[in-house]
Image (cartoon, rainbow, N blue to C red; front, side):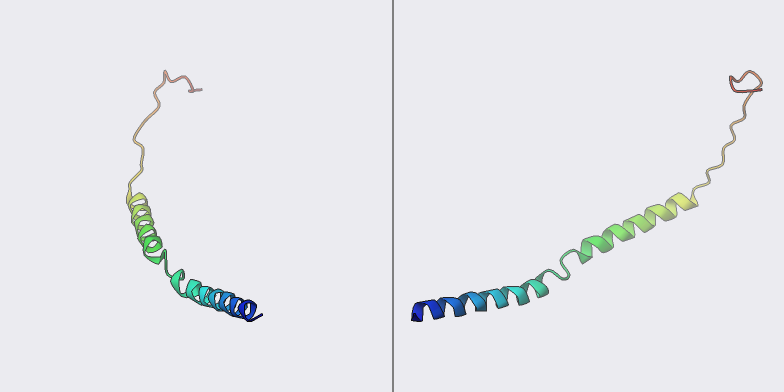
Length: 67
């Protein structure tokens, strides 16, 4: 009987300890990598928006799609 009570107390203690440790250990696990990727995305988006994508290509009279 005493063994069963001690086992139940041990299991409940480990369970409660595991729940509290999980909350504190995994909250900020990926923040640094997420911030790095967001910064890289913003830099790439700014570069794309700053590009001058104007086409100076003119269709000639012999083009296949000309009317």
